[in-house]
Image 1 (cartoon, chains in turn green, yellow, orange, brown):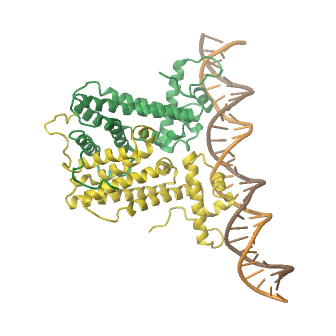
Image 2: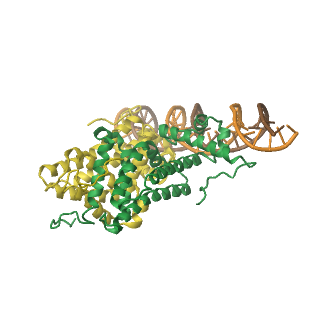
Image 3: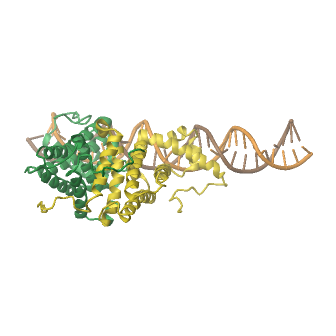
Length: 226
Length: 226
DNA sequence: CGCGCCTGAGCGAGCGTTCGATCGGAGCTC
DNA sequence: GAGCTCCGATCGAACGCTCGCTCAGGCGCG
């Protein structure tokens, strides 16, 4: 388990109580999440973060290296929550296909619940210093990996059909269709509720995974040209 | 055709040459697109935009109300290009299904070509003033509407099967799977090239649109619970 | 007193924006 | 065509302000 990137304050003068550090950092993250969601990273000032976490700017900078460091902590926190919630509900393993169906449902519920947080990562992670960004992206791949594993399990037990080369792509499709529920809510919510959404997207994904690998296109149709 | 939001400078003193205004604004947009892609909106200064467009800050502010106004012009410009390119290749109407297949291919090509621009809109449009943001989102819906129309045409001529209630959602799916090629390129590019991507995603989408509306889930499977 | 912890005024760089000065060429007069 | 005026277009120093961050000091507990 690697250490946080540029972050992880060298701790200025003395050795602090590590428990207090954890508590304070959580306060900071909680406050920052709220503010970043409401106003965005750039429009939020460090003074506001301090005020909202119930400490002074001085104290804030005892527990955090920089404003960007706060953003990193926020992203890390959200990703960890997300991943934990997902893995948590996938303990009981069944037939691959049913696991997948369950996982999609669970995932979409989590995405519905964490809409704002997902949006936050999407819109602000580019403001991270490069090293931290790489870190966050790696975490994103790990989460995608959860679905890759489920898909592969389905291939092995024969309950899913798919060109093995497309496993990664399908996993990303699932992830992105979930995120879509978060960042297109301004329009989707006007037409569908969560259950509608789960139904249609599950159908889309599982339909593909049941008969043909790359087929699906009715054969005999021409037009492979342009 | 509505007028630009808060934008559209009242023109300070005298009447300027409207043709020059157009040219200068295009210079500004071109420079800004490059800079925003490279450094992001917040990290780009107005001075840089001016320098890169070959004018002074003073001149810049003759053609633009504010930095946010530049961002709006950029978004508008990208969306217009995108929409024009899409509509442009959909003139010859065929059977709905083939039109859709063609449109998806064309769309993914455009997205591949405009990766950076798509990413730009995604990450920076939240920095727009609310009124301009609404404008940009409306444009996004219009573009989605192109695919809604194609889908409906397919329903009418019987070449596509789909629950009519899901038309909007499927259109959004297409749009988002296209955007995914832009904003997940850091990983997708490692595994797939554009043709792979087009093949798998077309299969996914068209497979669903050919036999069942919401079916796809093998009947008799339980687990509608949790 | 010493030490961990906190405070918040203050620093200074950087930013978006303004505005008086300047440029340069078109048009006029003689 | 020389000299002049005029005016839109351009310039960039300067302004005012915000913000991330620091640091000299204070408080209370052991």
